[in-house]
Amino acid sequence: MCAGEAPSDPSQTASDAKEAKQDADKQRDGQALKLFTVPIQIRSYRLLSMSMDDEGCIWAGAIHRAIHRYDPRRGSVQTFAVPYDLPAASSCICAGKKVYILGETYPKLVIFDRVAATFSEIAYPSDKPNVWYGSLGPDPRYCWFFDRKGSGAIKWDTQTDTPKVIPYPKDKPFPSSGEYVAADGAFWCRVAEMGLNYLAHDLGRLDPRENRFTNFYAAPKDGDALEPYKAAEQTTFWADSLRGRIVPFDFRERRFCKSIDVPGFGTEFGFMGGPVAHQGRYYFSLSTYNGQKIGADGHPYHFCNGVLEFDPVMRATQILRLETGKDTYYQISYMLSAGGNFFATGCNIREPDGKMLMERTGEILFWQTLKPDAAKADSIGSTGK
Image 1 (cartoon, one colour):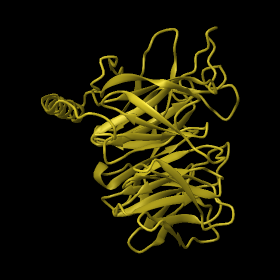
Image 2 (spheres, one colour):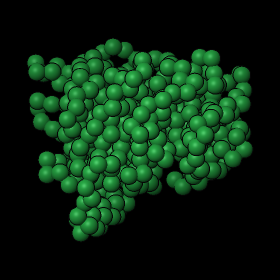
Image 3 (cartoon, rainbow, N blue to C red):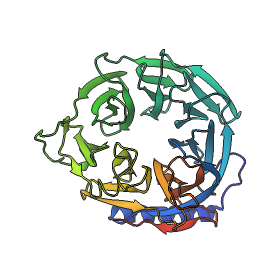
C-alpha cells in the first residue's frame, strides 16, 4: 500500500491475484499479454526508466526536473519537483525507503527519502560522471550504477550512502548499462562507444561478489560463423539496435550465437532498444529511427506505438501494438517487469493537425498487465503481428 492511501478490499485483492495468475499461465502457453491502459493526470515529453518500491508503487524519471510516483492499482500519480539542475532524471531506482535518481551528466547522485519526502545529493566518485542507468543485484543493500564516462561501474551502499568504484580496464569503452542475470550470478554489461550509430556492443561480465569485471567478449562481426543458441535458460538476448536483429549470448558456453532477424525492420521500425525480460520472454522498444532525421516510416523519427515480444522457447517474435484511435498515437519507450507484472509508459505525440512530434509534451498513460481498481482503466488485449 502506498503512503496515505486506504487498503484495498481483501476479497478484491485475492480475486485480482487469481486473475493475474491465470493471465500469466496463458502467457506461458503462448498467448499474448492482456494489457490495460491507464491514463494519468500528467503531461510529459515521455517518462523515463522506472522501478517499483516495496509498497508496489512505481517511480519514474522525466526530463522536466521531476519524478513521478504511480500507484498501478488505482491509477493515481504524484509528482515531486527535483530541487537540483538535472538535465534529466533518466532513472529512478528504489532501494529500501529511498529512491536513487540518476541525472546523466549531473555530477551528483540525487536521493529521495520516501518517508521524510526530502531530497539530498552526494557527489559521484569520478571527475566527469555520466550516469544514466543502474540496477539492483543479488544483495538489495547495494545499487550498481554504470558511469559511461568516468569510472565504469560504481557499487553504492544504500545503508551508508557510500560508493565503491569497481576497477575498470583503460583500454575498453565504458559500459552504458548492465542487467543482472541470476542464473549466472553476474551483471552482463553493454560495452560500446555511445553515439548516433549505435554500433553492436561488446559484453562485459561484472561479478558482484568479487567486485570486479571478470571477462569481456567482443561483438561478432559480419561473416562470423555462429551457431544458433541451444537453450533459452542459458542465454541472454540483446538488441543490435540499428540492424533489426536480436543477438543471443550463451553465458554458460561464453559465446555469441547466430543473430535473429526481426520482421518489419526497415519498414515499420529502424531501431530496437532494451530488452526487458518478463515471464520468460523479452520485450524490446521500437523506433522509426534509422540513423537519419526521417525515419523508417517516411516521417520524422519517433518511438512506435508498440513493443516487440520475443519468445526464446518458441523462437518467435511478434509486435504488440497499443491501439488508441485515430486522434492519438502513444509512443512506447520504457518498460518494467516488477511484482509479477509488466508495465510500459506511453506518450501521445499526435498533434491536432495529425502530425506526430516525438518531443511533444503529451498525455501520458501506463500500459500494464495489472488490472487497476480504478474504473477509468480500459482493457485492451494487445494485438500481435
